[in-house]
Amino acid sequence: MRFISRTSSDGVTEQLFILGEIPGVLWTPEDAAGARPLILMGHGGGQHKKAPGIVARARRFVTEGGFAVVAVDAPNHGDRPKTEEFAEVVARLRAGMAAGEDVAPHLATMHTFLAGHAVPEWQAVLTAVQELDVVGAGPVGYFGMSMGCGLGVPFVAAEPRVRAAVLGLLGVDGLAEAAARVTVPVRFLLQWDDDKVPRAQGLALFDALGSADKTLHANPGDHGEIPEFETGSSLRFFARHLG
Amino acid sequence: MRFISRTSSDGVTEQLFILGEIPGVLWTPEDAAGARPLILMGHGGGQHKKAPGIVARARRFVTEGGFAVVAVDAPNHGDRPKTEEFAEVVARLRAGMAAGEDVAPHLATMHTFLAGHAVPEWQAVLTAVQELDVVGAGPVGYFGMSMGCGLGVPFVAAEPRVRAAVLGLLGVDGLAEAAARVTVPVRFLLQWDDDKVPRAQGLALFDALGSADKTLHANPGDHGEIPEFETGSSLRFFARHLG
Image: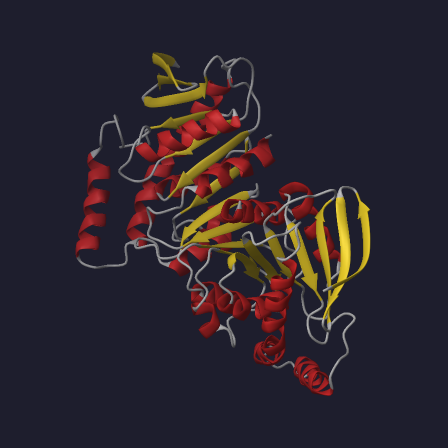
């Protein structure tokens, strides 16, 4: 794990790093010392580790919750090279959208394709980050919406170090089996008028989660319109389970 | 409005009162002075103003939020006489349950029957309580699950002094028209495995609410098993909208 840069502003220290081929970013409270709960944050499709929504949420988690937060570029996203195989998957997704087909199976294919790489990558990042004094081997949470949920469900199902997760903005296609293996407390966010994920498919993914402790939060609005107050609510959810 | 008793314990003052034929209870912070936000709390079917769930929630709202809280016995409930007409409605509900019929239309009939009295009663109680120095004409919220929702939806739709509501544990039968007239922020609680309210009917009531700002919280478990953390979440919801 190689650190590339370190900057601080408004009480938050941001460090860019590379682990193997994975570019990442670690946010911690400025002048933080000692171990603290860690949140892994998975970005959405076509986004990257420093997408505005990721950065804003990470900074709140750091300043209001004292968490460490890590985001990485998912395979074929952000600063990472795009493979021909991925380009073909994306082309089929776009062609399906243009033809007015049901997008869900195409999205599921893309997420399954990416998850084969993303799951072991998150595990390696987690191991490396937990060796830092400012993080340590404390409790770990995962936050991921949309594609961050599509890659997060198999990751959380596979990784016992993750103790709580905030997921959402995605349907059940391709995820039912992995969702059933998720047993940690889950907060699931659903947008009632989601233009990308049919309501019934989102409800079915919540239903499929194996966790005894899971809560659905549904709000009016489109895919990208999760209300700001849900960020504070997610923060309290993580504080309750990782604090 | 006639006060009957006044006791205080653990920082909460409880006063029993009678307004006309309506027995009620007012909880306020011990030694409270001056106006404060008020929560009207509607109890469930077969329950009363001092049912354990009502009392526990009221005490938290008072001690953690500084609210005043009022509960009353709904018509034909608690200390109030039961009319023959109500007994017939209940008998039809019980016969329907015994026969394995869909209970929703029977519940809707009962709630519609009661709401004709309960809505003007709540309005009279609100007017009387707001004349007290310790309450005043400040912001008002309504909290009601199950029958408390069935009577609360028409009340909140009719009463402009109510500025936010926590509702839930009920389906859309008989309530669609009133729900569409609710425009204040609503938190709606749904139990994912509710043995009394089919999931689709609960989701349909949330859908029917006219409010632009409404959030569904769904948790696993039966009708009576709302997790304790939702009480704190409701408290923050009211603090955000009435504070």
